[in-house]
Image (cartoon, rainbow, N blue to C red; front, side, top):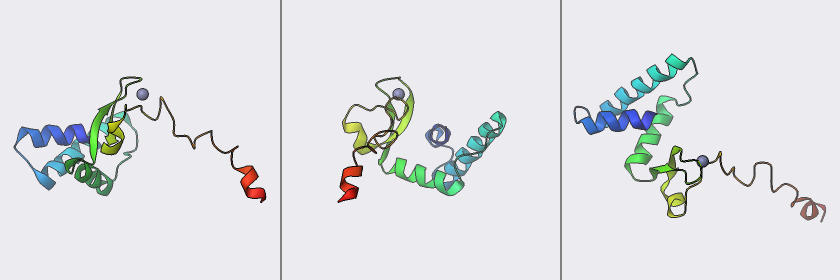
Length: 105
Ligand SMILES: [Zn+2]
C-alpha cells in the first residue's frame, strides 16, 4: 500500500525523494486509520522500504499460486515467486522433528 502511494506520487512528477516519501506515508497512514487498524510501518521502516525499492533490491511481484500482488526481494524473483501464505517458510510447522538426534550426541 505504501509503495503504491509512493509510486503514484513520485510517478506524478510533482514531488520527489523525501517529499514524495512523506506524502506517500501520510496517505498510507490515512488509509490505515480508515480501517481502524494500527499502522504496521513506522516512518523509519517505510523509508527503508522505499530506499530498498529504489535501489532495485525489492520488486513488485505476483504470486504464481494465488495471483496476489506483493513486494519481494529481487533475488527471490529469479525463480517462480510463491507468497508466504501459499507456501509458508520451512521453519513454520516443519523441520523441527529432524533436529533431536543431533542434540543427543
Ligand atoms: Zn500466494
